[in-house]
Image (cartoon, rainbow, N blue to C red; front, side, top):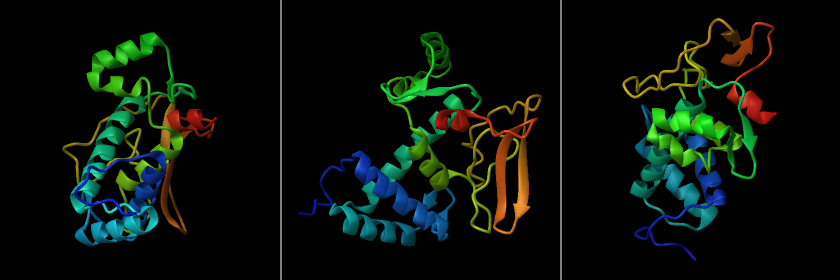
Length: 200
């Protein structure tokens, strides 16, 4: 039974996964302009989302979810972007950090408290990276070398600036047959950073 497009959109982990996967597909084929999907991208997203979930959400509801995820993603990256030693607390579903760490972070930005009991897990973060981070003409997603996380070239005014720890790490951007790819490595060539720690 299809949900009315005028009803309130509700999201669970399954429908969120479908939404993100379909958004990534539209981004990959070039249907993102600046910080949002194009009109054609939203048309495809709505049609495929309805087909896969039976939920008849309209463009406003889809755009609101995109905006909400993008806001959370930027805030999350600002929270953990400079951290290299965070684990993952499976019970709380957020980064494994001390109360003192959280107190300090929340003093920096009160909005960080939304992640203290429910953060963005690694798999969702990967999907959000693909939806929102910078892309180049080849369609490959890249890390911006001077920052600790991907930025959007068309949204410089809102980009979150994170200091890179150049004394300990460097960002390697290399060309290969598939396009431009980047990775964060330490001086011994090992991958480091919050994502690497979380994945372990």
